[in-house]
Length: 478
Image 1 (cartoon, rainbow, N blue to C red):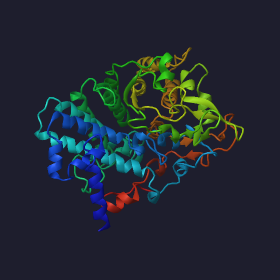
Image 2 (tube, rainbow, N blue to C red):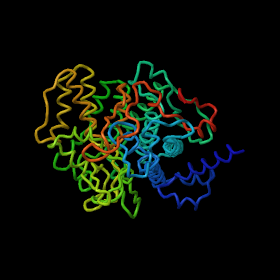
Image 3 (cartoon, one colour):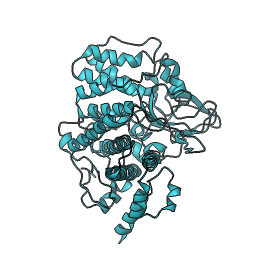
Image 4 (cartoon, rainbow, N blue to C red):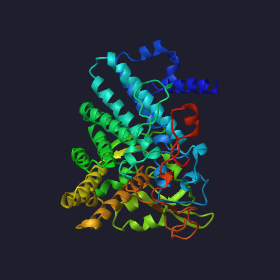
């Protein structure tokens, strides 16, 4: 009985995503008649599409969450941040890799991602009897968002194809393509999971509009995401072909700080406006609260990473800041990336999800893996020339590979990627023993090393999910 009640509740949550404003759905009953009425006109399908995008703003996805969402968990799990002793102890279990199935690390993301997927599947299924002019585009958007949600699940809860020799045959995730929250799907292999993600994105790329305006994906956003998927799959030439199709240029050096203060959109391919009167999410409080003289940090920039930013690297100004807690006479290397707009320290900034710089760095890595060092340096320098006053260049061999990996780390610090890069390269997470204060003193994080190959690189499927679905197999080691 408990399971039935839970599934009915989940069904209500899923169906409740048919429009971008959930409160208005009380006007239509949650039954088949109401659902049919919700998918008739072009405006209905546009509203349903916005409802899928709205799911991206859930806290455990891209809306900010103390439990660990896409904006913070990939760095909390990696070597980019140090646990701050003066914070609220948020995500400490995640940071220390001390989680088990009952702890449900990223359990909110697991649930919310499948809610988004169900919204996308519902739109796609209803589009079969719809022939409006916007059909191809909204279906393409739904497929792109469905692929993104499945990728977010796969990167946390399964291996990445290039992670190890046996990755493709290991446990992937349940790839859901039908709008039925009561199904009990089994997990597919990693190989099958990524094939379906790539298929959804390829089909989306063919039909999506060149641009769909603020808050929605267009062709360049899909290209960046698909190039990332091909990179994760080890399909180097496909990654290059798609990445090179991105037409939006990398943000120039003069705009990098402004991008993260929302006064420039340069190089941003997909973002969701976060205005106080509409969303009003203080997503930056996942890193710290307070201002420059009364900072209470949850996590700070690891001193090792802070030292990797050269003084002429504009990202040092854009991503980090010197802040202080005057009451305790302590100085910190704080994370600035989500700190606030000009003159604000409230963590209220737009949700930036894809940027053009990724296309160049994806292509650089793929070229290198094909042994094409010249094109790899050219792609890498498209980013470096926009970040340094005197950009490095000219590396060959292993030094070039390391330069590409370094630029990925610097470019996407505190931005959804670091843990997955370490994981797919088959490396260990190795944190230096520096403390949480600005000069590297203070208290270091509790745990410093996650060995390569550890089962902790694959988070456990939430216990509540395996209790409800007997066909879900738990990850090894949990």
